[in-house]
Image 1 (cartoon, helix red, strand yellow):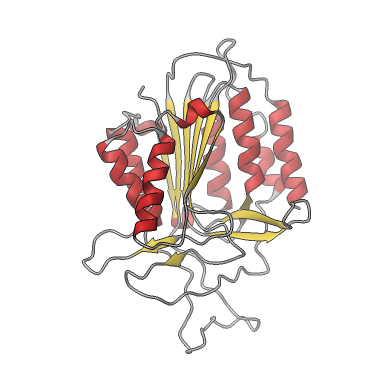
Image 2 (cartoon, rainbow, N blue to C red):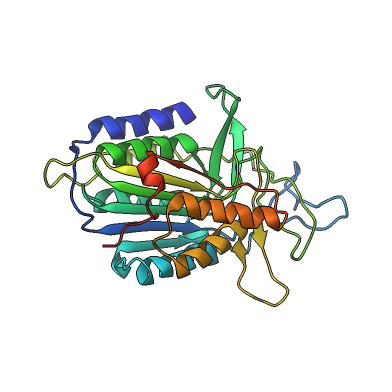
Length: 308
């Protein structure tokens, strides 16, 4: 099923008639997905899952909706993105249908010469994949436990580069062996393993055919675009979901620090910002190590977004 999913995405790239481009960034579009609420896990008998102490296990998170909501506000105030150009999808709306419709909106809206932002805050996991060198594939876990594979975003970033679109993709989620995104020691020390239901599967390939032909047509010939991937942790690591005893808003640790930087210095070079977040997390003894991947060394020296 995963290969069929990827073949559909490759078809999207091949079917695109977008030309290469180079214009000022006329518009910015953002799709922000945050999920706190997940279905309650069950055991093999279909009963609510309990830990070794008999307590009910919950896969719910706390700071993900705050992550994307506050980032949306920074896009509007710090980067002057038009409110109508930001689509926020949270909790139950961030299911298979919500993801496909949101992505279709983003693909249809962005034109050559524009820039896009995709941000996801929620659960991440790994599943078996014999096509990968390490035998594992990283996935995002949607609100209905449908999975979105990492290859989707690789294909998407390639499409945007070829289309003359400047893309920023931000992920505050786990990318490790089916593990939940872990709460830090701010409130509780308990950690548990996320147990995806047997029904969990990659987003249905037939739904992704809706994305065929969804990309906006070019206005004129342009130069290649670029991309920046910002990750809250390494491929094998969990990331922290913070609650605070003083009732401050919950957040992902990575996003919390990044938001603080962007509020003060929205034009901070992306790589330098990630390095600062990494340093703060290390000094505060967080196990996660943020990282970033850029389409070029020049892109790493630019802010996550250029001002419109």
